[in-house]
Length: 454
Ligand code: FCB
Image 1 (tube, rainbow, N blue to C red):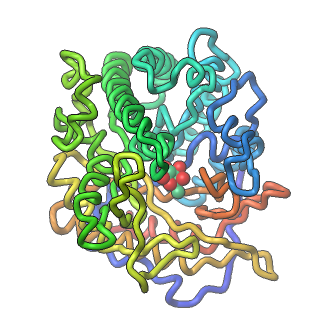
Image 2 (image 1 turned 180 degrees about the horizontal axis):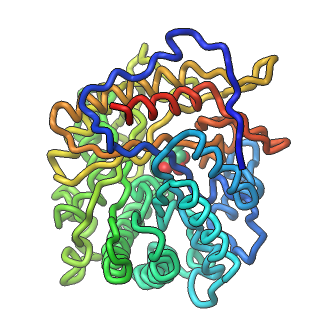
């Protein structure tokens, strides 16, 4: 299937490619998505419900949006692979919907679900794009949530069985695996960050510890079952800054939970000291070793610095803080700060000493087609160029960064905001499901081509 990339009039500023000095030709360029955010077909092909179907049904998402149709990628995956081929990416990070393979989370296997990812993986390989498979991007089967979800230590067994199924089915064709996407984000947010609920503190620690154990167990399974596997996990790393000097201790604590609760035990073998009082009650002999399994890479998602304040009424005593006035912001009000990205890459490189793949970075906005039907998004181009140049400078300064994936290939369902914000290089018309590559799509295609020519 061929797709056409529209020609659009663009200013010189929005066509200028990143000036790169340090990235090697074999640097990997990619795009990322996740199952619930793009697939749709939530009640098709034998899929069971996930916790996100429940959140949507309960009206927790802006405009009461749901994932029922999303980008209809379940039916249109071939067109989406053709888009990636036109973009010229070497790699595609996607996630498997656990409830598509195991509708009840464990037990009965859904062959139709397995076959969907066979088709996707085969189409990617035929297009010369390497599949990067993430096991968990937040869509826990509802049936498992009903049995305690990540609060139960049994979740480690459930996840190991699911990872075994994935490894056996796809390990002949897929070699790049991530265990979890941004575990700190789903654990902090599902455990009511910012709410007046101290009972959430213990739930948070259980979740963190069980997810870490599940990571370690999945690494072992993937390593044993997939010859040549390259395994990592994906963490959202952002500077956490105090809103005022009085918030310094709160920001430090927030930073430990946001940035270190997972990578420290997974890659260094221990939890940050500051977290130990909460974790200790759930720690069993041998647990640190079960979590600290050899990994091949650090998946780093980065958007923008976070501001924190002390709040004795909130979970763990920290909360979102006010931002200083006057920061440059994206159209969805996220601070733009490319140097902070470069510093984050260097810090993560020094701390964990693993090759880094930037598995998400991107720009949210409210793009709409213009009168000619083109979607012109110079803001996204400027953002991506600045961030890619900051990454290049970090590499020049010694950070071992080997790949960069834009979030996202397509506009898609966003966790709180539904379809009201757009992160794609490709515009999706949610009435017709038509895909329209934005100006940034063409720009990124040219940036990749130029970078690979060296
Ligand atoms: C990240 C998520 C991803 C997407 C982007 C905007 O935190 O991993 O699914 O929502 O933010």
